[in-house]
Structure formats: structure tokens, C-alpha cells
Length: 324
Ligand code: SF4
Image 1 (cartoon, rainbow, N blue to C red):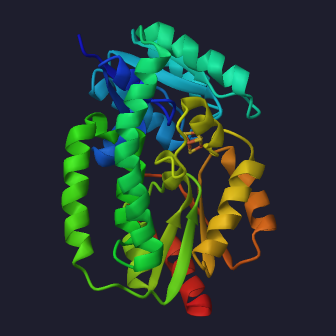
Image 2: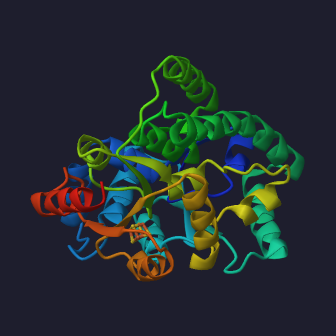
């Protein structure tokens, strides 16, 4: 019987599809649902104010979709994941832990994926078959990404939407692909846009509802969504191990920086917006991003799922006035 497998961040989702289950990224469920209510409900359960809103959102989202199992990535993502899994287990959820190796270690990653395959009762060749299917869609997403930075046919917001949703293909790759095809047919007929300022967006996806629209109105366009692009596995590899060794997000800031710098130059980026989340350990990585990226660099810090607040708006306006 097909089960809903909720998860906390991208992992080799091929295994879950190969088993015939429906994977759902809790971050997407949280942010596309009634996000303030998810946070509020988690706080009612005792989650403190000083815990990142994404964690609170994931917690309540798992309840709202009545997940059959929650898969948490406890190494290579969030410092809070282990505790999130503990409380979800206490609430009665079945739990599975997945760990990316701290270094890009092939044998360790292989062991972890094999454990996952055993858990869901699939073989490596079934996983590889599921990967081949998903890669057909990922190829289209790579084209959509190129249409953003090279052809000026796809906005930063649209790019964000399609790439961020490739973490779980909204649980239904066939439907996702149909909608993607429709979107690309429409986008292909557009007149290309030329932004006043070509921007990169670094960091975890924003909790703000309207950041992309706000930047667009100010004359900037995001033509590189760093982490979202990683979710879509931009450089396809035949082997699942090669694929997830190349994926930068779970590893160190050095791997991220290497990818970021290549893309900044390829995409002729003029300025960087680096997003950080309140109470997130990745704020420390942001110090290094800023140190190593020789471009105008604006750090934003979001907290609650809401529209861009007036102080952030003022900072965005000033940044665009100076660099746009
Ligand atoms: S934003 Fe940071 S603290 Fe929040 S869930 Fe993501 S990694 Fe964890």
C-alpha cells in the first residue's frame, strides 16, 4: 500500500518513489499551506519562540498531512532535525533517520542509501530506474533554469517555484511534468526581459511571501537560486551515488562556494541577496559567503512567514538604489 513519507529536506527521494510511496517535503507543505497557523500551533505545543519557524512549520505540517512516516535528515542539514524527530516519534509517528556523510565519502553514502533501500524493500536497480524517470524531468528543469538566466523568459519567482518543488515533485512526478510542460510552452512565447540588476539568491528558500515580487518591482531579478537549483540536481549523473556526492547543500561551505562562484560568473551576476533564517546555524556560513564573494552583498534575516517587513523593504530599496 502506498504511504505518505514526509521528509525534512532533500535526500535520495528516488528510493521512496521506487517503493511506490508518495514523498512530501514538509517545507513545501508548510510554506504553501497556512504557514502562520502551522507556526502558531507548534508554539501552542511548547516550541519556543527562539526556534526557527521552518522547524515549527515542519512539525505541524507532519501532523496536518497525517504522514505515515517522517524521514529526517540528521546529518547534512539542520542542527534541530534530531530533536524534531524525537518529538514526532513521541507523538506516534514512525521515524527514519538519513545522514549524508560529513565529507563527500562514497562508501559512507552508499551504506546510507542501502539502509534506506532495505527499509523500503527496494533494490539498487529499482532506485536507478526511478532516478532515470526523475532525471527526464530534471533535464527540463535545467532548461527552465537556463531560460531564467540566459534567455530572460522565466522570472526569479517562477524559477524558485519549479526548482524548490523538485525536492518531492509534489509527490506525483507525472502530474508535475505535465504542469511543467504547460508552463514552458507559455514561457517560450514570451518577450525576453532585461532586468536593471542581475541578482543571485543564496541560502535556504525565503520565508517571506513576497521577496521575489518585491525585488522585481524594485527593478532587480533573481537569475540564480542557489539551493533551489541544487534540489533540482542541475548536473545529472547516471549513478545515484555520483549524483548525491555532487549535490552541494549537505556538505561544507567550500562545496557550496565552488558552485556559487562558477554560477555567479556564468550568469553575470551583479549583486547578491543572501537569505538567513532567524535562529539558524547557517547564519555562520553566511559570514564566509560574504567574505569570499566579491560582489555587492545584502544579508537578509527572515523570521515569520509573512510579507517583507518595512525595515527589510527599506534595506532592499537602498540596496537597489545604490547598485541598480
Ligand atoms: S532554516 Fe536553518 S534552523 Fe531552520 S530548518 Fe532550515 S537549517 Fe534548520
